[in-house]
Length: 183
Image (cartoon, rainbow, N blue to C red):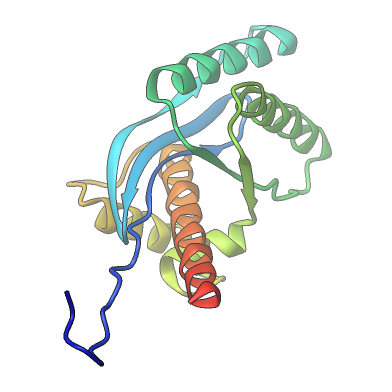
């Protein structure tokens, strides 16, 4: 019991979340699972899914979908963070990447995961503090934040982990703001 007139402090709630990050692509889709506890991130698993150029596009999309469904079932993430499509000059490539992105969103949604989308600028801002940061700066921050001995390869894998970390920072900020407004 606190003495009369003394204030008691309630410890801040620690955000505990498992996040699936996805960097969409049809030839190579990066993915990564991280645990977030407070402001700390721990890598759980990460890699890239590869499809073969000689495989028909519908089959490639099916492979991506099935892999993501199995990954979600295995790791049971709480949320998914996916990088928004950055439109490049090749419209055909943008359309194909958009299809792969749609498949990723569908797999997450069908698994009951909330999906959060972030632009490359938002991801760079969240990790480096500068929206126009170079790709290598983001990759080094992924390595540092996750305490890895090397930058995850290929680049799509590091990008997926960056999306997951970005969401963790965003979710943590949103929870802190909610707690301040309640308090």
